[in-house]
Length: 294
Ligand SMILES: [Zn+2]
Ligand SMILES: [Zn+2]
Image (tube, rainbow, N blue to C red; front, side, top):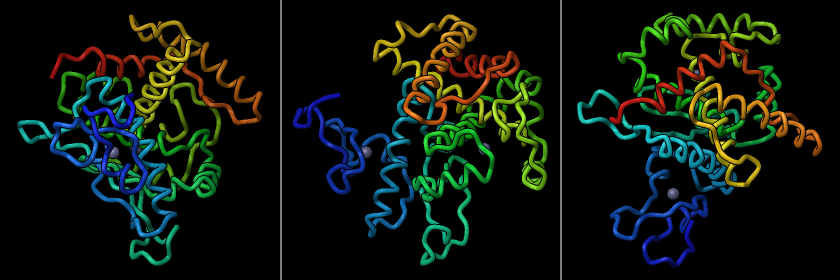
């Protein structure tokens, strides 16, 4: 963090124009937008203050995702062989939140490098309605972004890599018919009972969704533990093994939930990490933290 006015940096153009970004650009960089804002390919129509507000919520969550991606030194530009697209984001409106737009329905999701988020996810009332309708324990803009980034990093770090066989053993066959599995899941959702092999109900829909859900949790846990260390609640993040940091997390998340209950809020982390889920998180730890430098 630096003070505005530090001559080594200037504010991102989205701070100056819309007040939606607090990242900086190095003074010697030939860019108006910061590292995070440059990845946004489409914004909703910014002529309404409501859309600027919704866009700001999504960009703020995106910067938090980007912070972790940069911190873990994960690739996000296209690679030299051209086999991986750069990571990009689209924040789109549909008729559900604005009857004046042409798009009937925007599905939050991921395809070939692009994470698409329906801007209605930035509206707390609409998001809570969707969460309750889908019987979800947790639904946030940051959660969506972390989940969808999991699909990007599966393609980038796991598919066609030496991790393929281990992935299949833990999560299942990633090439199972995706559309059919999702159709089955939505037509006949599993009952909302804890299944100790899966971190969430949705994780049961397809091996790639199981991976993306676990990926999101890996990022939730590491980011929260880092903040806990910075604020002095936790002395140090234990990095020697997944079992070590997961044990710290289990203790921390119980405290976090208790604190939330004290304030009359829902549990911050209403999830159980079973041994099988820990194996999945350990696999992600291997893919992210113990990979050879690219
Ligand atoms: Zn920016
Ligand atoms: Zn997904």
